[in-house]
Every structure is written in C-alpha cells, then in structure tokens.
Length: 419
Image (cartoon, one colour):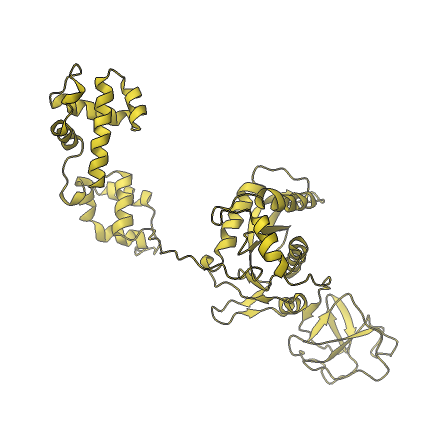
C-alpha cells in the first residue's frame, strides 16, 4: 500500500509539472526522479489521452491508474519474467553460490551471470544479485545484537592492522603495522606504529598506551596474536609465558577473542579501518618516529574530539570523565626477559639469547631443561656465594655469565630465574 501511494504522488507531480510547461529535466529535478522515468510517465499519459494543453484537474485517479498500469504492469508473485527464468535454475545457482561445484569454490555473481548467459539465460545483473541474495543464500547477513559496553575503565580492545609502507633509515621499504587500542566505553583510542608483530613490539605498544591513557585497563581483549596466544582454543586459550609475565607486571588480565570472530571485539575492528582511512591514507611521513608522533596527536585531536557515531559524544571527554579516574596505576618500566627452553651441552654450557652460560653440574648434560626454564633480562643481581649453584629444576635454575672455563667460580655474575 505504501509503495502504491508513493507512486501516485510521484506520477501526479510529474504530470503537473509537465502540464505547467516545464521541460523533462526540470520536471525530473522537481519531482526527485530520473529524467527517463519522467519520459515514461509522460508517454504513458499521452497514450491514455492526456494532451499538454489540458488542465491540471484532468489528472485524476483514473488517469494515474492507467499510467501506473503502463509503466508498472502487474506481475504474478510480484516478479517479472527474468525472475521466473532464474527460479527455474535456483538449484544450480545455489550450488554456485555455496561452492558445491567441482572445485569447491563459491562463485561471484558476475561469474554466475556469465555461466547463465552461456546457457541462454540473459537477465539483468541487479535481478540476479537480488535473486541470489533472497533465494540462494548469497551473503546472508547474520542478526547483529548490540552488546553492553560494561563498566568504565575495564575493557580495552586491541588489534593489529596493516597501514602501508615507510622507508627506514637504511633505505629499506618496510611494512608498517598499527597496534590499535580502543576503550570500549568511551571509544577513546591509541595507535602504536611498528615494523614487526613480535612480543617486544606488542609490549612496547602497551607501555606507550598506558602512558597515553594515564593508567592501565583491567581487561585486554586482543586478537589471536602469535606473540600473545600460543594456542587459540575457543574456551581455554593458552597465553605465552612472556605475555603472562608482562600481564602480572602491569596488573591486567587477558581475554582473547575467538579465531575468526570479529564480533568478539567489534569496537576495535571498526577503529582499525578508521585509522587506516582517516589517519594514514594520503599522508607523507619522514620516518616511523614522525609517523608515531603524528599518530598520537591525531588520537588526541581528530579522533578524540570527533562526535562518535554510536555514542554521540566526544571520546576524549567521555574518557576523561568516566574512565580515567578508575584506571589502574601506570606500572614501572618493564624490563622484558627472554624465556627459552635450553639444552645442557657436554661442555656444561647452555645458550640463552645467543650467549653461552655455564652449568656446574654434569648431571643434566645432553638433556633439555623443562620448558619454560630460563628467563634472562638486562638486570643482573649480585654474584652468588661459593657453592650456591643448585641442580636445575622447573622453578630454580642458576645461569652464569660469560663462561671462561668448565667451572663456575663465585666471582662470576649469575642470576636465578624461575618459570
């Protein structure tokens, strides 16, 4: 009924303008329709007996009905002849859409149109697209359910995204990734640019994010980044030892998203596209340092002070009012250790971070220490007392400094490292 009423008003407006002496282009602009549509309406009205010298009062319901019947003929089931041709081949089109063919790959609508044309079925592309969507399951959309944002200062969603390329100081053209942090409640974001996706890069991005936000969020929701998640189980994901050590240092917990489940972190999924299109695209950066400085300024200014489409508020203002006061304190700088599984060689040495360290006991020669056993950082404690070397266990391993022989004198620097 609504469609019929709109059509009547549209036809009446076109004919009223045409009887007033306006040209087809002018009539189309006034009625808000295409010029070809105006021509069809006028031709149908003339065939029904309407002359241009007639009065506007002659445009009655009977005349408009005749025009509508001519330009929009009655269709059985609401569809035309092209739709009926496609209905006879619905099973084949469904198989093409779902990829049930011999190569088990879903076909595009363009390819399906070509295959149908080879069989003598020539239909408009839009009709084929509409038919495949409504009847054959082409790109069927799932129902989207809005999820509550939760409490302020709790959840921070994180994701990597490819931005583009930069030339580094060595003249190499390198790929640039953006680690995007998005606060769920305020939508305030921070962008960390890096050449790599290692654990060191992720931790460096987190450290910069805490400084930018002025605190630590209680829960991080990352994608299944290899440095963070070693086993992407949907129920019990396994986090890397290095990442767990950092979370204990900073005081937050990790709740990884499921594999190929962007709806688990929808706030940052859209933010990555926004960063790529609004910040990176069309800009020229001298180097990564320049790009990072401009990224932080963009996060505080352009991105932070815009009116967000969902919240209808400025992210920076909402963050300052609701989330900043409840964040965890910024931790001390993190000295990232190296966690590794080492083998005790027959010269009583193990290799950690491409450096050799001596083990005084020969009991473990030729064996692998239980993983993870060794952590090594830039902080070296005082030398152990003479005779304090102990047998390597999962919770207790003494690693010496640069070896000078097969023994471990008490003057050598060592560090006791745990799991």
